[in-house]
Image 1 (cartoon, rainbow, N blue to C red):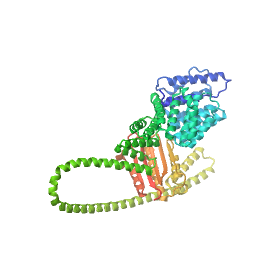
Image 2 (cartoon, rainbow, N blue to C red):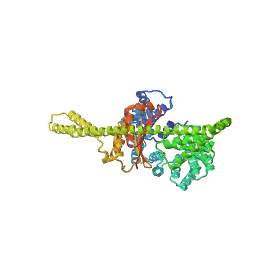
Image 3 (spheres, rainbow, N blue to C red):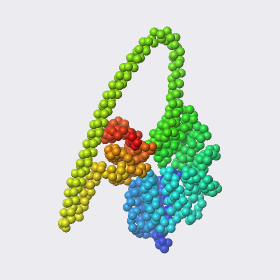
Image 4 (cartoon, helix red, strand yellow):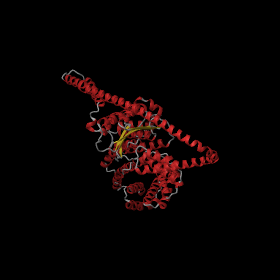
Length: 621
C-alpha cells in the first residue's frame, strides 16, 4: 500500500546519509543504530507516545548517547517522526530550534532543511519549500554529495511542474540529470525521465519528449518500482494524446490508472483519469469520458489547485454535452467558469451560452408538448368564446401593461433615489473614516512619536537609565510608528497597491499561515480613493479570517485577467453562512465600499470547508 506518507517516507530514507568521519567507529555505529530504531518505531502500530518515550526509543542500545552530534541526530529523527505522524507543529518547533545551530554538521543541517521543505510543501507554501531545498543543495554541493543534489533538484522540478511553470521545471530537471553521475541504479532515473517528458510536451518539444521516453522505455520491463511504471505510462499517454494518436494513447493511460488503483497511488491516479477523460472526449466516447471524469473528481488527492478542478469540470461538461444532457453540461460549465483563478474566456462564454440555449430549448419543447394536449381538448370551447373576448382581453392587457409599466417605473425611480442616497452616505462615511485615520496617523507620527524620540535622546544622556527602560521605550516607539503607518494610506501612492498589500500581509503573518500570490508586475493606474478602498477592504477581510475562521492557512491573491483586477482572501477554516454574512457589520461595510467603486463583492463558503471572499473591479472603467 503506497500512501502519500509511505511514499514520502521511502524517498526520505533514500536521501538520508550522514557524512560522518569513518575514523570514529563508535559514532558511525550509534548513528546506524538510531536509523534502525527509527525504522522499527515507524513500523509499529501508531500510538500516542510522549516526546520522552520517543527519544528513549531512539536512544536504545547506543554506545555513547551523551555525544552532542548523536543527540542532534536523535532530534532530527524525532522531528521526522512527528512529521510522519502529521504533528507538523511539533516537527516545525524542533526544526526551527536546531536548524541554525553551529553544532550541526553540514550534511545534518542540510537534512533539516530538506525536512523543513517538506513541511512547507505539505502546506502549499511552494516558494518557501523551494527556498529550503536550495539551502540544503548548497550544503550538499560543498560536500560533493551529487546524488542528494540530484534528488532535491528533481523535487524542485516537480513543484514547478505542478505549478505549470514548465521553463523552471525544465531548468531544474537539467540540473538533476547533470548531477546523476554517481547513480548506479538505472531505475532511479525513470521517474526523472517521465517528468522530463511531461515538461517537454508542454513546452511543445514533442520530438525531444519522444526521443527521451524511447530511450528509457526498455527499462520499464526490468524495474519493480510501481510508481516509475505508472508515471512512464502516464507520460506516454500524454505524449500520444498531444500527437493526436488517441487510440495509441488509451492503453497507456489505462495501464497507469490500473496500477494506481491497485496500489493506492492517488495523485497519479487522478492525473491518469484526467488524460483518459480527454482521450475519450476526443474519440467522442462520452460515456467513458464521463466515467473517468468522475474518477478524477472523486479521487482523494493532495493537490487542491483550482486549475485541476477547472480541467475536470470542463471535461465532464464536454462529455455531458456530447451525450445530449445539456442540463448537466451547463451545470458543470458554470462551475468551470466560476472558479476564481480561471479566466472567463470568450470561447468558454460562447460554449456556456450555447449549452444554456440548448437546455432551455429542451425545457420549452417539453412544456409545449404538455400544453398541446390541454389545448387540443379545450380548443372547441375557446373557439366559440374567442371572438367575444378578444377585444376585451386586448384592452385589459393594455391596461394591465400600462399599470405594470407605471408601477415598475416608480419602483425603479424610488430604488435609484434610495441607492444614490446610500452611495452618498457611504462615500461620506468612507471619506470621513479615512480623514480621521490620516489625522490620527499624523498626530501619532508628529506628536507621540516625536515626543518618544525626544525622550529617547534625553535618556541616552543619562547613564543611570537601565537597558530595560531603553528596550521598553524603543518598543513603544516602534508600536507608535506601526499604528501610525497602519492608519495612514498616503504610502499607497508611493509604493503602489500591490506592494502595500504585500507589506500588510507580511505584518500580519506572525504565525506563518498567510500566503500572498500575484501576477501584477506593473503599477496599477487606479484612482487613489479606489486604491484606498481596495486596501482597507482587503485589510478587513484578512483580519476577519484571522479572528473568526480558525484557519491554519490563509491565501491572499491579487490577479489581473482581461483588464479585471481580482483580489481574493481564501481560508480553510470553519466557514460562514450567508445569514451570518448579512449580519456581519464589517463584511457589509466592505460590500458597500466595493459597490462605491462599481466593483463586485462575492463569497463562497461551506461548513468546515473554508471560505473564499473575492473582489473584482474593471481596470478600464
